[in-house]
Image 1 (cartoon, rainbow, N blue to C red):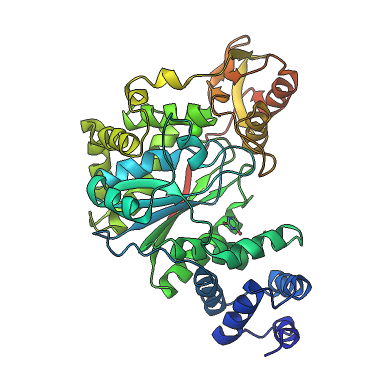
Image 2 (image 1 turned 90 degrees about the horizontal axis):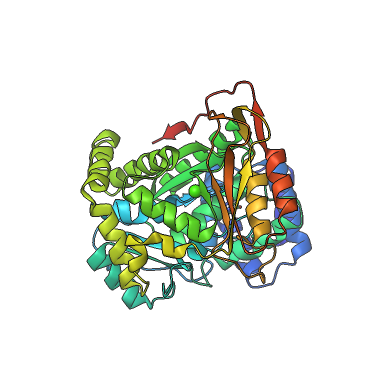
Length: 432
Ligand code: URA
Ligand code: CA
């Protein structure tokens, strides 16, 4: 087989076979196909699209390109969750213990954030002592006893995806639905998931800027999940404004604790119920989404979900006193208010720009080498649709410097107050 022939075949609109895709991924991972040929193929895929069979073959080839995590010694159906990305997305911190508390095992491998704000690992590391590295044995034992553990993603998971993603990033081929779908699903499959719940975000703060693209991506991933024998469901959720009120690592841990105690922001809690219900159904702890939701509501009301979180923190070496005294995580030197300049209704909170403001404070990384300041970030006091009076605080800025003129300017430009506003939609579609 020659790569040039395969590029030509794809360019002529023909589908590649499973063997051909397997060849390409194997040889590319082994550095035997050069980046220039792979770039040409990626651009061809961008324009020619792929069939479901091609995407499924690509997904499995990438999943098999490196280490595969074997979770078979964990009892029960292992359901993983993945979000295509958002700002202030605190769901994993809430969902992992919540779903575990009703009996679905959560063996979660998470990544760090690169971009606006920290990833789940960065958030967990704002808890003093919390260990995100466990041996395979300790990880599995923890999930078998407490039903939940959240650790860092192994370095050798789907190396083909790592290499391809870096190439896509510099060849304008990131926003291709078959390539995004296979990239995400390959990592979930390599991480050992039996079933997968996808949170496909749409809006300014997301990869998919409109509903139509989000719908295509969701249906594609659900179909290739089925072809790969991983039962998959998806939720299309809104990411035009940040989720919840907190954006920043320790601030989001506090928000997760409040949510697990039933006192978090309504939108975050609702997202956790919607995604959690799918996880519970896929984990076969309930027959229907309604039944699953009732179980989750009960786990919040009874305190079972919060207890599971506390145990997870303790068992992974973290300081569990922060669970009952979350104020200890507020370590930023300054807490500065952002007074509204006019009265009206919040019409827009442009998610990606607000994410950048949090990053400028130090809550996210601009390059892989940057370090994160866990204590800084934003707490929004107003969300889209809320009334606001001139002078009222729109947000508290947690900062380790008083020089925040640029941050304030960016926030004022992206918190838009008008006479009226459309009610925001949190969940656009549920795909089962
Ligand atoms: N997230 C991924 O993991 N891969 C993509 O291609 C896009 C988003
Ligand atoms: Ca949040």
